[in-house]
Amino acid sequence: MNTVWMTVAAYLIGSISFAVVSSKLFGLADPRTYGSKNPGATNVLRSGNKAAAIATLIGDAFKGWLAVWLAIHFQQRLQIGDATIALVAIAVFLGHLWPVFFRFVGGKGVATAAGVLLGLNVWLGVATLVTWLVVAFAFRYSSLAALVAAVFAPFYYGLLFGVEPQLAAVFLMCVLLVYRHSGNIAKLIAGKESRIGSKSKGKN
Ligand code: G3P
Image (tube, rainbow, N blue to C red; front, side):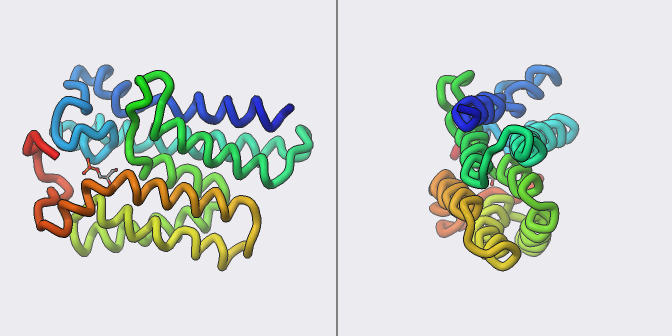
């Protein structure tokens, strides 16, 4: 029973789109109407408002971290197993991608995945974030950095903890993240992807 309500609660937490919420709070246009139209920190940055982009990044990462941290923190008391923690991890991520509060139109999941990984284990999160930073600084493509980090994250988990249910969740999350970046992959190949910090071109 705990597994069911915890998974549903994680999905609902994930469904809060901080790109939409922070844009409203900062008096900006809805990020689903400009740039890549993705409700995520990278696209909010295209509005030119760094504070709103940072708020989006922190909010979306925090919800992923919170859901997983709560599940791990209360694991003993609620007598839940690793499979439930894996379900919570994937549920909060699915909430971000297909949010019930926003007609199931969500983001690509980069910040939320980072939060989930940090919640599962701080070193797992740090290793993945360092991977993102190295690629982002080298190439200045947010999407490329996310894609490379997503490829490495399951390997980091396997190296740190071996095969367990959470590894399946991390793997599925990274597969979905890559899938959500199909448009970005096409633009990267075509040399049309916008670099970090460049303003909206009004299309995707
Ligand atoms: O966080 C998503 C990022 O990897 C790409 O975003 O807006 O450039 O499609 P965007």
